[in-house]
Length: 195
Image (tube, rainbow, N blue to C red):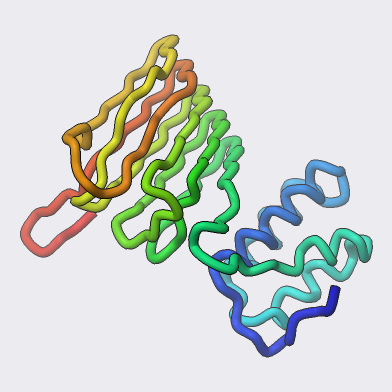
């Protein structure tokens, strides 16, 4: 696989692919948690492929090849999103692509999926959660809605403020929650603030 031009700027999908490779290297024992955290931060700060090349230099060549991103040919080709934070906070916002399937397995963590400016790869998105003392917040655009299709609660709550029927994208929420909380809502406004 040819190496990308080092002068090409990184996209959000490129960064997520690189973070996924660093996560895999951590699970393989090639990186410790401090190295993973430091390199992940540098990936998010990087502008071009040249900026991240040295972050993968000490990983085996086969692993570096996996880190070279394949850009989706179209929005419908967006890969599934699999989040597994532990004692962390993950936030997606801006013009990112919401895939047809999102899985999150959280332990003592917070995940925020801000979809207000996002592009949905499919009209229906399956969101499967596994919350352990964690919280997931999904912020939807005005034309989107959400359906709770059976989250098994062992303590905690599901708060869906987006259940009205619309012609836009729809989130289907399933999974389990052990003393966790899932919140699906629209944008909040006060004067000129939006959150």
